[in-house]
Length: 124
Image (tube, rainbow, N blue to C red; front, side, top):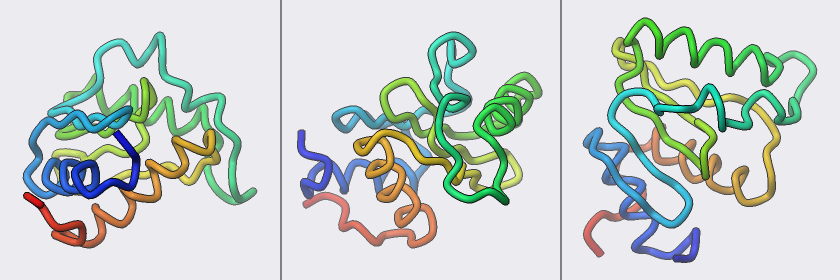
């Protein structure tokens, strides 16, 4: 499934807008926190885009802490890495990290979809 195919973008947008699980290629939306991230996620190995932002391990620690506190309402994964999550207070957390080309592209789509509900047409 192509990253920028209409069906993929539609699944991602629908999942984000409605908080429902989805699987679109290597991008998945999960209700709650990702099980097993503690072992497989690569967030702590990502490169920081700007010197002023949190390092990858700080983001990973923040995610793990929120997961332990049951404060994560929704998680978006690229492969096994949480690239965005929504906390129970409604706030989105999207680490400003440099991932692989593919995961960075996934994150770009997710950034647009979280800030612009309905941006990618659903059901087409």
